[in-house]
Every structure is written in C-alpha cells, then in structure tokens.
Image (tube, rainbow, N blue to C red; front, side, top):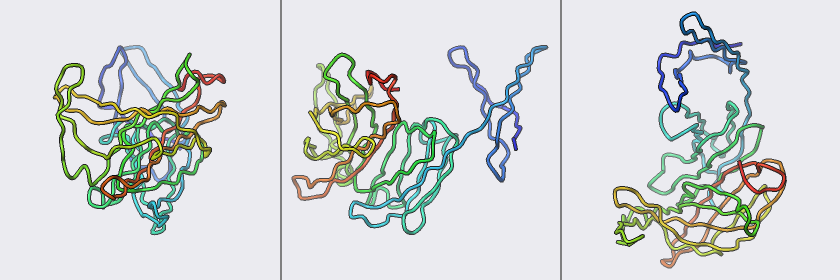
Length: 276
C-alpha cells in the first residue's frame, strides 16, 4: 500500500530543496512513498520504502505508581509537522508504532504539567528497532540532554544537561551574574545538584560518575540558564547505547527534586572515539 500526494510547500537550504505537505489520512501505514519531480523535460522519480518500529513501556512516578500520560515524539522541534503521539492506559502502559529515524525530542507528561509535575524527556532518540522504554515522571526535568566522547583524553563521556524543578521555576527567582565580562540575568530553575544526586545507566548498566561542573547557557537577550556538565565512565561496543540520567534527592529546603531523561547513540567505530 502506498500514498501519493503533491508537495505544495517548499523552501531552499544550502542548495537543497525541501518539499513538505501532509498526505491523505490512511487506515494503515504505507509500505512506500513514490516521489516524482518534474523540471521541464527532466523527471526525477524514486520509490522510498517505509520502515517502522514499535516503542512500548510503562510510565510511573518516582514511587512506582502508574502515571497515565501522553508520549509525544518530535522529529525536529516541539510544534508543527513531525509530532506523533499516544496516551497510555490507566496503568501507564503505552505502545506506539513510528516511522524509523532519529527523533529530536520525546516528552512524556499529562495535564498536570506545571501544577504537580514536569516532563520526562528523551533527546535524539533513534527509532530503528522494537524497544521498551519505561519513563518516570517527577517534579523536575532533564532538559537539553546531550553527550559526547572525549577523543584523546581519559576515555570517558561528557554529558551536558539543564535540570529544572517545578517549585524553583514557579518562584521565578533571578540572579545577576557576570560571564566573560558581560552581565546576565540567570533564572534559578533548580537547586544545586551534587555528584551523588545523579545516577546514570547505559544499556541498563550503572556508569560511574567522575565529576560534575556547573556552567551557564547564555542568550543574546542577556538571559542565562544554569546547566551542568557531567563526566562518567564510557562503555564500549558497536550496538545502540541507551543513556538514562536520573536525579532523586531532597534539597536544602527539604523538598524532593526528581526527574529522569535519556538519549541514544551509536559509536562511530568500535573504538568508541566518537558518537554518531
């Protein structure tokens, strides 16, 4: 089965023309997409096979109780074309079949966002096989999670992320800080996090935390947001790596700070010198 549609919107980027449009709604996923581009007497045609994978799992809070919620996969951002999602059942169980590819972000939460919970996030998730992903939802976020392997250093991973906690975000407190001789207004979106507050698992195996350093993400408008760079031990292997970072601790005010985030990667080679 296949679907044919006319691409009515286009934009040019770096010498490429990208055509976009929504096809007709189908009862089942298409097996292939037929592409035909005519430019004068020249005709370009290609048949693209469609592949899919099913992602399923269970959503819970940090006490282990079911947390019925939506699971939304985004190809490039958080709005517009590319968002595919589903709701879990009352027990937090969900299942979704997706076109294979890399998804920029996944967020998981219900209608209590900003009131009693924040979102569980996945970043740069690779959908290329059926997998199980169990999500935990708390009052925090592991936002903008990314990682890289240090090539030529101590054979470790570096992980950048921005923690956010609901109670701190609602206060809307701002500090004035100076970075490289320039003044910024820094939003206090989370309590201070220590190395012992964070746990990391890679393909379900615990990684050792080595160091944690606080930095700031800055914007052109003079705003700044606190972030951290975590250094952990690095696994090897050519298979897909699923990296899960979690924090679950009580802050200086006696309030819980809980969240979980994840990302996926392959090593560019068996030596693990770079991720892709």
